[in-house]
Every structure is written in C-alpha cells, then in structure tokens.
Figure 1 (cartoon, rainbow, N blue to C red):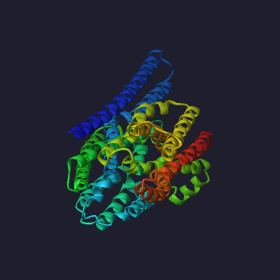
Figure 2 (cartoon, one colour):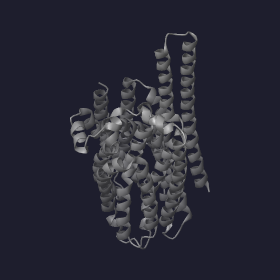
Figure 3 (cartoon, rainbow, N blue to C red):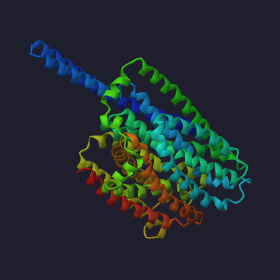
Length: 489
C-alpha cells in the first residue's frame, strides 16, 4: 500500500507542477495579448493616418496570440500527457533490472548465466531500433508512434510475465528493447511539432522528469511487489503490474488526445499553429542522407555525440544499481534504495528545467560543465571506496546519498543540450532520426558496459565499472563544452 500511495503522490506532483508552470506561461501570453490590444486601441484614438499602421498592429497582435496559442491553448494536457506517457514506458523497461535477483530464484529459469549476453543483445536491439524506427517516426508522426509503442510495450510485458523459460523470455525482452527505441524520438518529434523553439528545452525537461519519476516509481513499486510475493514468482507479478500501468496510461493518452483534436477541429488552434510554423519546416524536402551529410560536417554534432554516448553508459548503470547496492544491503532493500539516483534527477528536473531556458549561452555552458564535473567526481569517489583508497562511513546510507547527487548531476547534460541540438539540426523532417542517432551511439557504447558490468557485478567486482563511469564523466565534460561553444557561434 505504501508503494501505491508513493506512486500516486509522485504522479500528482508531476502533473500539478507541469500544469502550474504552463498556467504561468498562459498568463504571460494573455498579458502580451492584452498589451497588443491596448496598443491597437491607442493607435486608433490618436487617429494616425493609418490604415497601414492599424493593420500592422492588428497583424502583430494576431501573430502574437497565435504564437501564444501554440503553447497555451491546449498545451497543459499535452505536456502532462507526454511526461506521464514517457514515465510509463520507463517504468516498463526497468522491470527486468529490478527483478534480476528474483528471476534467478525461479525454477523455470535455468541457465541464468546467459543473462549478461541477454542484456548486451537487448541493448544492441535498442541501438538498431533507433536507426530503423527514427525514420519511421518522422514519416508516421510522433503521436502515432508513441501510441503504438505504448500498446506494444503493454502486450509484451504480459507475454514476458507468462514466459515458460529463459529462452522465450530472452526473445521477448529483446523485442521489447527494440520497440522501446522509438519512445524518445517520438516525444522529441511531438515537442518540435507542437511547441515553439523557445520552449523546447523546458518541454524536454518535463518529459525527462517523467523518465526519472518512472525510475523512482519502479524502485518503490516493484520493490514492494517483490517483498510481498514469495515462491520465486514475484518477478512475474512485477511484469503484470507494469503492463497494467502501461495500458492505463495508453487509454488515458488516447482519450485525452482525441478530445484535444476534437477541440482543434472546432477552434482556431490548428490554424494558429500552422501560421507560426517556420516556412522551412513545412517546405523541407531534404532527404535523410542529405541531412546526415550536412550534420556530419558540423563539429558540434560529433562533440555532442561523444558526450551523450559517455553519459549513456551512466544511464545503463542505472539498470545495475539494485545489483550494485546488494553489496551494502539485502536485495529487496537494494531495489528500493536504487531509487536514490532517480530522486536526484527528479529534484534537478524540478529546479533546473525552467531556469536553464532563461540562462544566457555562457551560463548554460557553465551549468552543463559543473554537472559533468560531478559526473566525474561522484563515481570516482565510489571507485575509491571500492578499492580501499577512501573510506565511506555507513555505506548503506552514504552510497545512496552519493547516488542522489549523481542523479542530479546527470540529468541536465544528458537530456537537454543533446535534445535541443538534435531538434535544431534535424529540422522538421528528421528530428526523430537525429534524436535517435544520438541515442544509438550511446547504446552502442552502453552495450559493452552492460556485458562486462553484469559479469563483474555478479562477482562483486564493481571497481572497473565505477572507474569507467568516472572516465566517462570526464569525456562528457570536455566534449559537451566544445559542442556547446561551437553551437553558440
């Protein structure tokens, strides 16, 4: 019951915070609209010669209202739905990492030594899915892709819960990992289609908040399910709960988006959005190879790609945190304590998303650099503790506390700078593809880490893994600094 209450409170907090922020945006838009109307009335009272002036002011007012409408008319439901939808997908994809220990106790899963290979293959499936599903998302559209992804994920989780053997489960999990690859690109495509460019970083931040809430809810909810289920079948119950959550969010998304589209058909929101879309977005005929050729000549792309790939390895380590924390506590408690990283990321999301959008370019570079310094230092401290160079008092408390700081540092550079750059360079026609290319490179690097981390972790040898993560933070620090300075020119 505590886990379910925690999940409900987290969902309510996310939706309330998002709605409050977007309500503030709406009020700003209304104030700008009223100011334009006041200017128009003032110009008419002064009887300027001017039909041309009046027409110009009226046009300006209309354009401003249109631009505001693009982000305020029906955006609060959409923004909250995107965050909730991505949260449910992350919740679904973290089912197996939480259940690794429990799955080994299931008599049907003989041959658990193949698990490192399964994780590596699943990561490569996600990498391949990024390349295949990215162009498909750009062609089909972000919203349709997101709905299909949630439906397939829910069905696959049910099938996984019924798997009679590790062999069958392995094929299902690889398929689930492939489908999951479409999620972030689909969300990025929707953000680019439905929001003005100045709001991209904020919207990506709120979706990232959904991701972190998904990880946090996974640890709390699934850890509680494992505690309450005996007989080696608790992991199956976890998959069934995950499928139920995913199906519920899918139904909510379809219901509310249908109402939103119905509102568009009877109002002016769609027309206003179309009028504010840059001409290049609708008229773009650039092919995917031409886009890749153009982007490949941009040093900011390569630098950001390397930085994002290094941080993706940290993201992959999230999957092994329950296993890593068993060094300091029993497995059920470790599954719950692994939420520490997600807590840190969520706190950073709530405090930095809006502030980052308002920063100057120089301040953005400094904020990302400071975050990457911590991405280097925190795993370095954990590595030093592992090899005996540093003594951490009460590691059952200290290590989760450090993971909170790690999660807070990781959120900003991982999500926002690469996401915004991908939407800018990819354009309207290839935003999802370029977003997925950033992720694909990262998953390629993370697949190697997955294989070795699983093998080393099973032996309790985490020092090489933590050392690699610390080095990855240093790579991200250098590469993202270069990328953001080049992109700002």
